[in-house]
Length: 93
Image (tube, rainbow, N blue to C red; front, side):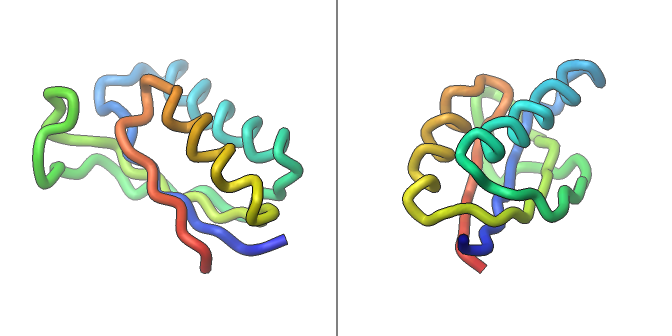
């Protein structure tokens, strides 16, 4: 298992319940791919460098986790299908 870090930009207009669902969904996807969680940091609302889907701001979250390298492509695909996630960047630490 390798150590990875994922930066998420979520839609800024999500309700608290929807935000909790998205964060729970992120954890579920990692667990389904036999990964383990370390930490989730909320970095707050920040202005985007350019508009994404007509949003000028986004909610930034940083997630640290361990997972096998072959599962990373499955994670990227699953995160891309979630409409509440504007962008995600997964890097090996």
